[in-house]
Length: 176
Image (cartoon, rainbow, N blue to C red; front, top):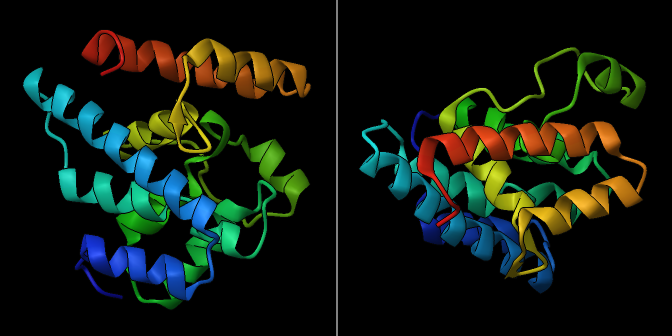
């Protein structure tokens, strides 16, 4: 396994080679832009953030959508990156970005390997949060995301996303 992250160009090539749709790639680019703004706001507040990991993680967060558009895209994406020999921090970021986190019970019901599926590091939280603020490739208020999760009977996920929102707001104030 490599310790070196791919460049932005290599990440975009990996998305294309994995056969991600243009719509998914456009979404990933939008999430990366917002994630970088959020990371920069964290840095201005004196926090230590790996900007490269945030950018590349955000670009690749939905690579698993090349094979499935279900919640399983997180696991599939992590497997794609593992097969490509990419670094563990990037793989962890991919598998932890969905729904503000997946509990151990939910993961077991989904048939996922036993692991941690909650964003733990600041970089993981930034990418997960940015993903919740981009619908397709456009920014949306957090309220829209929460409303949609609640409508889809995903109240637990909505609560976790709200918790992540509050944590990020405490770190950086309003969303950049």
